Image: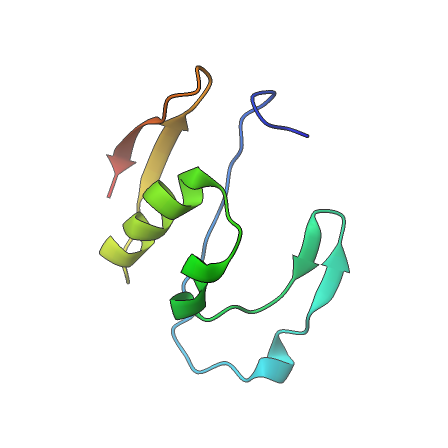
Length: 85
């Protein structure tokens, strides 16, 4: 419902210690189900093209670091650049 209507700021934090499943309970929120998903299973999810083609490859590339990416898909074409990394 929000596509092409606003800007999004997404913050992704990498966990640097072992986390037990009970520490991250599954819960229902307005946007869907909040649940822990192993990185290897992300590709099997129904995720947006921006996540599949841009965000998750950048997460893999910058493990343990920091990056900011600007993604513009207002005209139907994905244009993006890493602003910091």
